Image (cartoon, each protein chain N blue to C red):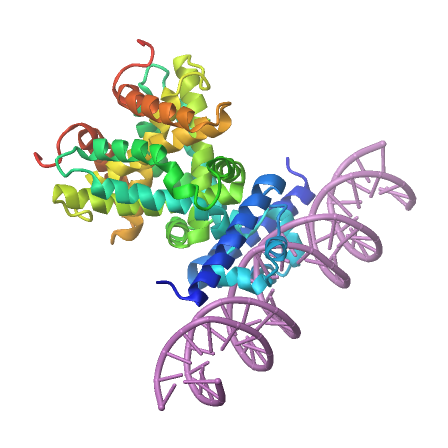
Length: 208
Length: 208
DNA sequence: TGTCAACTGTCAGCGGCTGACATTAGCCTC
DNA sequence: GAGGCTAATGTCAGCCGCTGACAGTTGACA
């Protein structure tokens, strides 16, 4: 059982996160000050910074939930599965179960809107990409362990994860600049792009 | 012929850039204030911001020179060359001719030290990665044009460039966290990793 | 119930960055 | 070569993100 103090603290954090996301997705990230967020929740600015390391962290907190779950999904894939197939399955699984992670904090649609705010705000995109690299680092270790390799001696786990991450980033960008912002569209793009990356590297583009 | 005013302006910018790099590589990025840089050149802080959009831009200005040249090198590759081979050749060519671009501003060794500052400073790494994405966008258009494709309709140019970029990022990271900070080491890593990416994706890692 | 610790508020201050306005100094024409 | 024009710089005030220090409040737990 949780203590009252912990519940109160969590409630404040949730309120700050929800207010931040609400403001970011309506007014825009740059147009929202930390004071705005704190004021909306009726706490001091200092309290905001006690819950979030910075404005960026509040903007990326939702993504972090999804990414953490994705990494766990990769860990849970059967050991017999090939590395890239494990990544592929974990990603698709992630899209399917997005509701379970997000809906308890904000509506999925809000999450998807926030996603696009990140993609279209330079400073947020930059922070997002750096986090991606950290995730890739973690994933490389997971894959290396699955295959019994030393991640510092054998570059192949890092290379595979980097390639996979590159494809996912192209996918995300295509989704966020496209017209269909549904989860289903994201899922179909993921499948399609992962299928095409092999041919794109080996075959000539002129002989489709 | 250049006007005196333009020469003076360029000289101020160069002095600011050199002072910034000098301070960043000795004292560290976070430990250096814009006032420090301006003071070292004996100009006002406001003048610094008239030459650089921000502190980050001064830190990434050297890289920008190299990246711009790399993109030009890709454009200049023979049209008959396969896309990925064009990228590969352009990168290797870039390392070989690094002197020509950099030495007129700072010693190559200083550039390599600055490179590692970027890799090890979170906020700089983030900004660097975002720039990489912009570069990848440009390169995808270049490759699409070479192959006569529409970059918005066919994802293959973007996918190929993203994969290539992913490999290069793994390479850079391995170089900057390794022990041999020479250009030759960078070059060898590049060749080695680009060779291994194919097998890493297709073959089983256990049957080396 | 009283002590301790955690959460919060207030205040002061730093650093990045910008707009507005004044000043200097190269450029260009008559 | 004296004038006006304009680009480059300096100065000043102020916003915003963020942090440390200190004080007040409110749960936790004996």
